[in-house]
Length: 503
Image 1 (cartoon, rainbow, N blue to C red):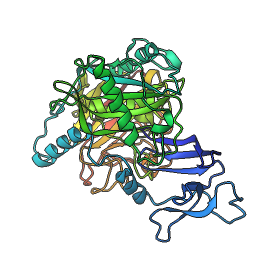
Image 2 (cartoon, rainbow, N blue to C red; image 1 turned 180 degrees about the vertical axis):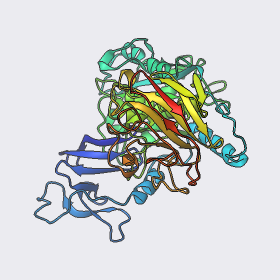
Image 3 (cartoon, one colour; image 1 turned 180 degrees about the horizontal axis):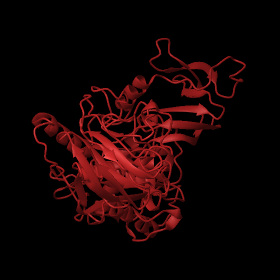
Image 4 (cartoon, rainbow, N blue to C red; image 1 turned 135 degrees about the horizontal axis):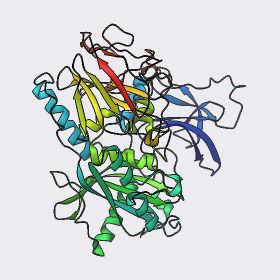
């Protein structure tokens, strides 16, 4: 679970080997866990057992009550269920990323370079919808490592993993297509992403050597990955086909290890994405650095794999809120909850990121007096720009195919500020999302953390068929000035949707 998880069940192991069933919400950087009856827990630093939690005296973190989970009834003890630290504290803890490298991954470096370029040139320096800085189009080849242990054998054969990554029309384990199929579909055929699946490697040590919770989080994972890479190099494995960026870094390394994840959160081989701290040379001009690692028991699913490769291959940011006081883009994008709620058939990537990746097949600059038609399942977008950094981008989303698990169908209007952050839910000129869904019902449930999407989010006839500077919601720019964008006569939701641009 390198990406976010929401109320996901886990089984933790206490130091005496007893099992503890919990529900967790968070990601690899920060998470909150609670018992099945709703009481927040925290790992006691002295005993190593999970105890019932309480807020620290100044409210900047959780601390142990000294009462081991299960030792007494928390209700009788007068403990409060569902306690958690404030959102800004959760966000700060997430950005601290305990145990993982402080050095940014390559995809973060590339993304930051784009943001710095936009800042240095000024988002208002040009009005024309310039093409993305680095289109993710053409043929890209990543690496998939399969690792088993002397005491835990891989349950899924290499051939099945190869099909999961690369086979057209794949349907194994209930997935809607392969990883290749997913990225081909969402890019309108512009990205052809395959993975070289290496032979299964058996580690030098038993599993518990790599899962040792006493070793800093991520260290043994990096050691295991380098161990596998060194072995494949020694046997003459050909890494030459892997795709690299302009600094010779391989875009993506995906690691599956045998068996279920046995570690508690942020320990041992808990699934995560990170980097190797120092690059590992695979061949001339082939440097391994970024990776994502997860367990592989007897199932494979697209959600996490596609989300993490959205980072590594496309430089996509997370569009969920690290502080969890809001819900980002909800189910409407893979880079938020779109792969969490439907892991076997993750939803589409939103129009903003598709356009940034160079996947637009048609971009219509909406102008007064025109009627626009947008088809669902195609990268046809309407756009109204303030400048290079802030704009509205529109698409048609319909509850079929890749988007079968969406909560609504209709015209989807995104308000983009490329220098914003989906950690900022205040909806003010100074603090707002990078990519905000303009929710047709005007309730801003995503920003308020009420839900991950509902049946009244998108514009359509019979629900809300108009958006302008004076409606609720409105089409004003973040600084409060009028955008002049009026969408009206929005049609019935379906495979095609029409709208007029006023006045």
